[in-house]
Amino acid sequence: MIKNITNDVYYVGVTDWNVRNFHGYHTDSGSTYNSYLIKGKKNILVDSVKYLFKDTLLKNIKDCIESASLDYIICNHAEPDHSSSISHVVKEYPNIKIICNEKCRSILSSYYDSSSWNFKIVKDGEGLTIEDNNFFFYNTPMVHWPESMVTYLANQKILFSMDIFGQHYASSCLFDEEEKLSTLLYEAQKYYANIVMPYASQVLTTLGKLKNLEVQIVANSHGLLLKKYLPKMIELYTNFAKGINKNKALVIYDSMWGSTEKMAFSLIDGLKTNLNLEIQVCDLKVTDITKVATEAIDSKVIAVGSPTLNSNILPTVAKCLCYLEGLKPQNKTCFCFGSYGWAPICVKKIQEYFEKLKWNNFCEPITAQFNPTENILQNCFNTGKELSNI
Ligand code: FEO
Image (cartoon, rainbow, N blue to C red):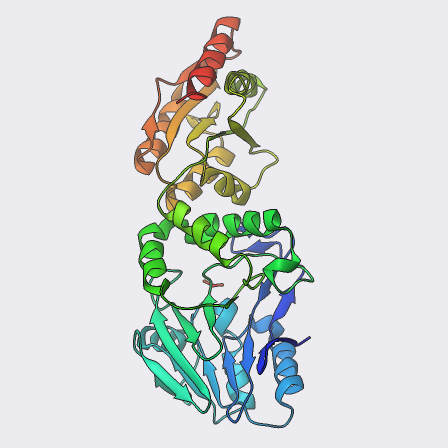
């Protein structure tokens, strides 16, 4: 269904209610692939949608411009969730021009047979006037891919921000102000943590580059469009990119026969002695890594526990730490613990990840053979108490 955003600018994207796994990202409510149409003497599409929804996109375009031609498509980002319907749009409108930067053209040409496509290549900061519309294009490398760019429609003060400020969130709402602020910010945090987190320095560069634009609407590529809460979103991105943490501790663990879990619970009891500390607990038997990354990004303390299994850690813990290693949460104080039968290898393996993540070890690990004694549990409690006050 098409929706009016401003005079002459329409939402023609789609809602993917049923997607639950977006290349590993657990999308609890689904997601959206946002696409926009600027209607006028020349009709201009901004980004497309995942190919599974190409027919809906084409219908939305026709509902909007009827039998008129579609003259341009601006491609801000070549990742297939936004580019994989372009071939179908070109087939329907063979005279269309594809506006993108050179890197994007190159990536599109490796994904699709673009030999017949008519490209208009734009440079960083370049302006382009199409009839009544004045566009400016800004490259935003690595937010989220090397070719990523955003498009500013100056005469309407709309920033087509591609993945930036997105959320993998499906709802019946279109704008931020229709949704609870806490939901919007949590979904944006989840998106940032799982998609954008490794590119903190590029995020700061991008925010600096865009800060002087007068923006009334952010028309992003996923989730709710921003109007009212754009300042909150900029603050969120700035804090994350600078590695600013909350007064918050995250305990991540899995357990075989309950021994590591007992240690985790004693540690948590110690953390709870600081009533001002937010505590999040992720038992990896029942918690997906998307949630772990979301909680990790603004935690100042991260504790990880695993028993030894086959001279290693549990696969759930290894998967989680491997994921975090790629996402690179910054500026963390860490601690590890675990139980074992005959070889306390678990904590050594966890510490190898801590080292790669450049986190600061708070103290020596605590281990328990088979079953933690009262003394060991007391040590876990005391460590939690000390950690709660750093
Ligand atoms: Fe939504 Fe980086 O693509």
